[in-house]
Amino acid sequence: MASGKIIKNVVEYIVKEIVEDTKSVKVDVADSDDENITIEVRTSPDDMGRVIGKRGRVARAIRTVAQAAADEEGLNSSVEFID
Image (cartoon, rainbow, N blue to C red):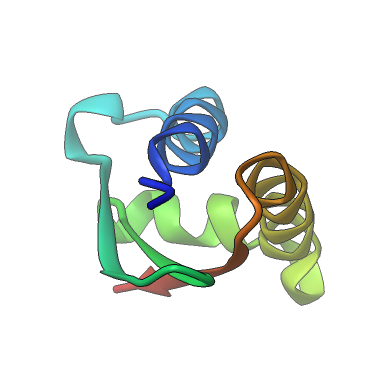
């Protein structure tokens, strides 16, 4: 069974590079099975806007990179930003 560890690490790295308060970043595997994985991202309220970006562009880019990482593990990924 694929673990999704690569995806979690990739998303965590990207988010930590974007935010100012890296200690507040929490990236968790919320749900996972043989085909799908859901990653939840939490940051401080001040940094959430940076992570989502204008019109969600940064969030969309993070989801795209996460899916590329998921492809390596044979999974479908979804990334949720929790405030």
